[in-house]
View 1 (spheres, rainbow, N blue to C red):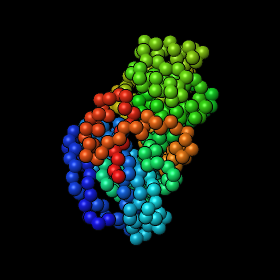
View 2: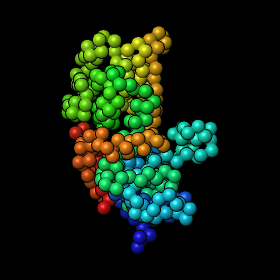
View 3: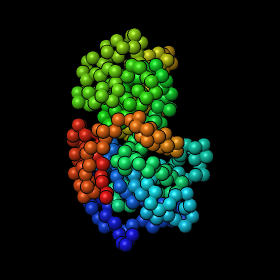
View 4: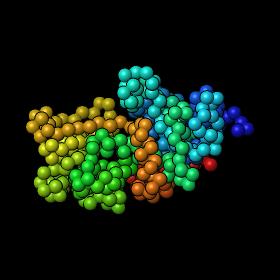
Length: 345
């Protein structure tokens, strides 16, 4: 590196990015500096952009879905070499608390996530603790590798809800993450996979991703779900939007003894209504999942390596770093777009 400065898209206030020259992060003894190649925009970035999430971190360089090449390593970082193509687990826990000791880093009270609580990858370089660096296959394109983080979140969701082969799965909301949930359901052998989205284009995309049944008319949801589950309801319902009413619907549409995977991030003030007696009498379970960590990333990377995920819709829209703000706005307003990646070449 010949300069000590780099370009970065800095969120200086809710709704306002500025492209700035900022200092390149300096490696501590156990750090790795990654030269960013691709960084994806996701729903969490929109929440941050609007000031609805992690507002205390602003000003911030967002970007937590990324791939790149190791540009420098700290004096004590020996497991990775300069020039290695990598992705990273973004979750930096304290390493000492009750949850970290139990390998529950996502629940660490002091968790600091790259691109959310600390500067991320909407920049030429991003700093990552060595222990969180994950090398990628030499022949894996950077645009594919940058999907590791969002896919890992779905991997974790399926692990926690224990979806089994032959079980019926209902996916409520088939945007980018919902589409990945549909693909995960197909990979584990779920059947039938029922996808619900009021946007017909996204519902059709879910069909192409592996859904057996698609529903885009809200008045048909209950009838069709019952029709394809012998009247019982789905074994597993996945809420992937973050809508309080959809959480209520998920609870109504799973069978007695079924379970709900709580994935979508609703607002802090959102509230759902349900009858506790029905939860008890129907023995319905619910598993929440927030982000991903540890082996979730490795499993997601393996799925991408062997082509188990259809990635075409996620890698076709590419923008420059200088276009970060307009790209965020574009992602917010165009439902046909599943992912926008920022390219830093």
